[in-house]
Length: 435
Ligand SMILES: *Cc1c(COP(=O)(O)O)cnc(C)c1O
Image (cartoon, rainbow, N blue to C red; front, side, top):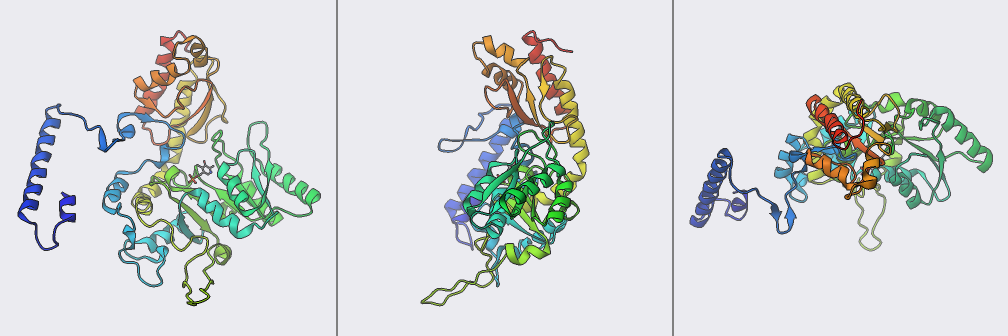
């Protein structure tokens, strides 16, 4: 029906358009009565060969990267309304910058984002990776050292590579945790051996490999002591748990909208302390040589404007919910541990992440349980994910039976019990001992 209006005169509908609206309404009534009667055909395609995506409705989705990026109901509504290209630019006025738009409330949203992260200024960016890139490209010259860790995400490496920097890593301890001591030791070793300190350090609060929590508060202290700018990578924390950048001692906080803030991809946030605003959010100074054109206060690292439609509008629509849900983090962790408790009842199954769990992302090892079955099963490893799928569980890497990850973020107590029981049920079916 919106489509009919989109092609009609603003003043009135033609007879054929009126008829089209009426026939759409009739169709809607028919669909509703079919649904009520429990019959009718399920829609399979959105358009052409594009299948309808019903993963979140039909399944419990424990995909490691998808769990906290699922849209809220408000975000899904906003998406329909604001899906058109440059939709948030309707009321863009001088000085023509995304973060200055008052309607919809982008300016206010940017200020709230900074406050939410305990920082002074924030910008939305197309993914956490673009946040790393903006900082690295501002701070790192060719040959400069950037301190990463043994668990750093590849996008951090690539951001350094793009700037011509070199990477030095900090190793984890025997529990796969990055400690403040290890960071300090590596900085000292670098200074001894290479005659300079890192131009930047990036530490992930929760790493993507194990979902372990690293000592970011300690990292903040080390950063201050050795005067190394510190980028806090909150790809798995910003939007799921409370994050206070200044309390941590971070110079920069980066979050991922599509991973942890219930937003469309690509989206993310970069927040900085006051002292960095002029450097990271520097404005353009370039001029055309013939026309002498210049471009006002557009920010170089942001290439002027960043998220101009669906990504930012879903971030905004989800934001009130995100602010509330971070307060519930303890319950998410409790449910994560409850799931693990059930999961470990299957003999031979192990957890490779730190225990007890401090996050909802967990890496497990089922080499001595489900992988034993896979060895002789005609479907090999696929028997496992297919048994899970039969029970409505999806998101575990297809065919994986040795080590694999899952994320229980957002699941209710009821879903957690169901999920845990599903593993037990599959174990029992194949004669694996259950405690
Ligand atoms: C997912 C992830 C990223 C990348 O986030 P994008 O928003 O997709 O750019 C970076 N770092 C870590 C630790 C991640 O888990």
